[in-house]
Amino acid sequence: MTQTEMSEELFSLPASFGQKRMWLLEQAGSGTALYAMRAALRLRGPLDHGALERALTEVVARHEVLRSVLRLDGNDIAQVVRAPGPVALPVVDVPGGPDAAVALAAELSREPFDLAAGPLLRCTLLRLADEDHVLLALVHHSVCDGMSLGVLLRELTALYEPCLHGTPHPLEELPLQYADYAVWLREQVASGALEEQLAYWGERLAGVRELRLPADLPRPAVRAWSAVSAPVKAAAPVVRQLRLTAPGGGVTASMVALAAYAVVLSRWSGQSDLVVGLPVAGRPEVDLEPLVGFFVNTLPIRVDLSGDPSFGELLAQVRDRCVEAYSRADVPFELMVERAHPDRRAGRLPLAQTLLNVQQSVPLGLAAITGVTLEPVELPDTALQFDAVADLVEQGDAVTGHVSLSADLFTAETAALVARSLSAVLRAASAAPGTVLSALPCPVADARAAAGGAQVSDEAYEEAPAALPAGGGKPQTPGEHLLVALWREVLEVSEVGVHDEFYALGGNSMRAVRIVTAAREQGLELPLDRMLGQHTIREVIAHTEAATAAGQRTTTAAAAAA
Image (tube, rainbow, N blue to C red; front, side):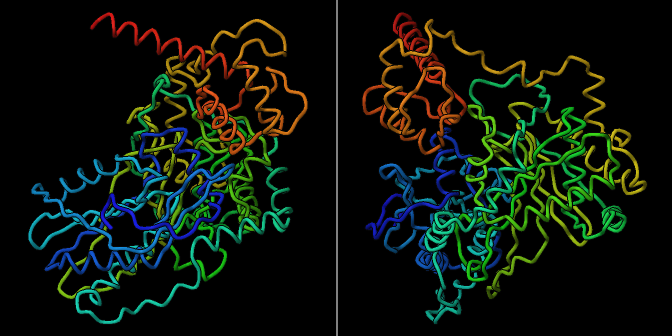
């Protein structure tokens, strides 16, 4: 099976909740490569390309999800599994050395995936010299997560020598496939087994407001989704001191990092009630650990910084909320969103606009290859779907990593200020845990205060709404009449007004997709990204008509110029 040729389709099953979210995000931002998981491995020594290609073929044969695609099937998303077949590993000569290989990896990472056609795994061997290669693996997030990348590389190296020598491989048969997990989780939700957990999230997240970080740049009409980054480092004694002095104990390094990150975000934004997304592995059973798939879940941790508490008090709160969240981590993030009913805006992720990812530093566990040195290659961030992300690694008590901000909204100088602020808060709080939050150093907040009104707030550059046609709650145009009928059918309600908000009437993301699909079948082209945000019929039709008029003006102008 080459990169473009596909084998026969074996069977189709409902997609997991996470896969549905990835599919929706891809439809809303088609043409981008925001959701590509990446890993690179440098191999120095005599390498047999054929053996590595056969090992890759074997890995894909073992994991059904790596030969799956995602498609709209009626009113739901299905994962379609294809039969195993040979997987090609193209070789590209890169004469410029490791830096050139990293640059080419970034370029290849920007090529979007086609979720319906596949493949959703692309591997390339970058040849620096005869005995010096970089293996690049690009996998769509809908079929892979960070832990899965480790599984992929471990199995690939374990299978190389058996494929080279034609001997049996040492890997045990997989106890499950990712589709089994997806079916099990759907059954858990349908049976009501997760209702207590869902109720917790609905209560905890009630009334949550979107985090508004004061951006340096106006939000562009079309985002490039690139990132600016800066390094962060917190020494082990600093983190250890905070862990030991927190009231009640039981604090981990990741909780310390979350508390400090919340302080920086609060001081920077001026908001005392905020949510930080915390990724967790999402593999509650040991049988899931050897699988490739999209298991990772996001826990939206709500932090209350009102009343100017001390850092120690905040740390105790963060610990308690993390423990509560960890014990209710089986609920898919998508269902938390539906239960919480947060504000939704086109082009923005609901509930969490920022992420804190803290991973423990553990050996990758690659199998040895005779005569070949294996070394992971760090690939810098090339895309960012959040406004801000802190990616940290916990090594004992030391914490290192980097902060990345959206380059559409922030400058590299601001990224450096945020990183400095995170380190400064940790150092100061370690020296005096009783210090109130307002007294902790925060360079990014100081820079904002010094700039006065120079920075542009999110409120200032929201897209101005299109002028709405006159009329009450009754449809006035053919487009409005069509959407009223579709909303009644899809939302199963008897009365719909053109000013009724979609999600308030019981809408959700998949129902929005159903309406878009049905409208397109009747000749009305609706923007999915706007449908996934909060909207009324009148707002959607007005936006659609304005976009159509703008397109017609552009076409007319181009024709006149020609």
